[in-house]
Length: 349
Image (cartoon, rainbow, N blue to C red; front, top):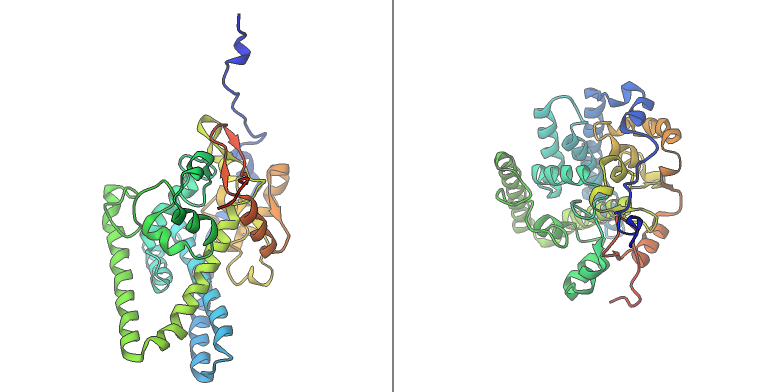
C-alpha cells in the first residue's frame, strides 16, 4: 500500500512574518507624500534637462555630444522615475495631478503613461509569480527550447534595448499592446485613459517628425534619438537587474502569495547615480509598499531589514558585473516545481 506521504502535494511555505509585521516596522511618515517636495524633484529634473539642451546648443561640438547623450539620457530616465511615482500614486494625494505630471514626465520620452501604469500595476500585484507576472519573468525550460531565434535574440541578447518592443508586443507568451485600448492588458473602463496616453504620445511623435523635417535628421539624432537610446538602456538595465538573479526565487500556484513574491527582488547600488535617478535601486521596500514616495525608501528599507532578516536581498557588487553574471546564467526555470530558480542551458543559442 502506497503511503499518503508520497502523493501529498508539497506544503505551502510561509514566511516567518506577515505584511502587517513589515508595515508596523516602518515609521508612519514614510507613507506620506509631500506635494511640494515631489514637485521640487520634478521641476529640478526638468530644469536640468533644459540646462543640458542649452549647454549642448551653446557648445555644439562633436567632443561634447557623447557626454551630452549620457547625461541627458540619464535625466530622461530620472523623469521616467518621477512618472513611475505618479503611476503608483506616491507622487501626491491628488489623482488628477499624478496623471498630469505622469504624462508630462512620460510623454516626452515616448512612454504611454496610462498603458504603462496599468501593466506595471499588474507586475506589482503578481511579482515573483511565473504564471501571472508581467515583466522580466522567466520562461520555462520547455518554452525556451521552442523559442524561435528572433525571440531568443530579443529576450536574451538585446536585453538593454528591448523596452520599446515590450511596449508594442509585451513579454514572451503574452499578447497585447500598451498603445491599443482594446488590448487584453486593460479593463473596459480603462480604455479611455489608455487612448488619452496614446494620443499624447502620437502628438509627441508628430512633433519629433516635424523637428526632423525642419532641422534635418542629424539634428534629431544629436538632440533626441541618442539620449533616448541611453534612456532605454537605463530602463532595461535597472528593471532587468531588479528581478533577474540566480538567487531570486520564483513561485507557481498556491506556493505564491503577495509578500513572498514582493521579496523576489533585490536592492542594488548605482553609486553616484542613486540620487540622480531617485534611488530606484532601493527596490525591495518599494515592491512591498508601492505608495512610499522615493524620498522615503531608504529610511523604510533600514526599518524593515530587521524584520525581513535573511529574506532581504541586496547587492553591493558593481552593476556591470551583476549584469554580466545574470546575462550569462539566467535563462529559464524548470517546467515543474512550486519554488524554482533560474538555470543555464548546457548549450546557449
